[in-house]
Length: 187
Image 1 (spheres, helix red, strand yellow):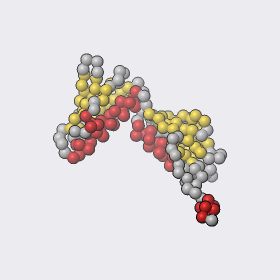
Image 2 (spheres, one colour):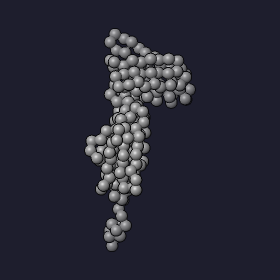
Image 3 (cartoon, helix red, strand yellow):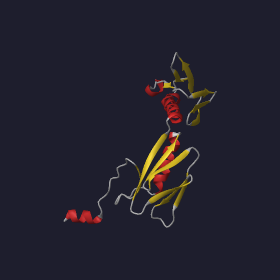
Image 4 (tube, one colour):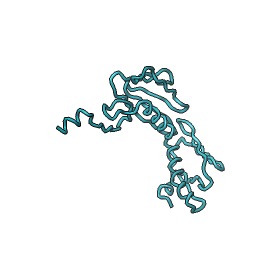
């Protein structure tokens, strides 16, 4: 059995789990998420004295069922964590004159292009600005938070020579030496 798939998911107080034939719905204080479950995986609830848990099992030992077992356990655990705590990613804008503004639910990025780039927040995502150089992307769906962050970074990825652009907060960008540095070192 999968080491990850075997672990039960503990359900905190205030979270409701609804299991239908092929759909699991998790409802909590921050919102509601649902996940269609493949027929190879069986999802069950385990109610003991004070602990409620979600337990996943495989219906058979096919290669597909084995590969999906840990995946669906992780997806359900992320859903439970998302409706209770939520997820966030931080992005930093590095560069002279680069800045960002928030207009309603829309980010306006000034990144040295001839025009400002406007990014609209999809449903379930909130943008927050710490200052004009840092963007925080928040939401309850971990995959959506990561995808929106990646799309923002893709607008102006970090330059390998100067390091300018949009990067994750703790990302380390390795810079290449320029031609002047290379030729001076060779002499």
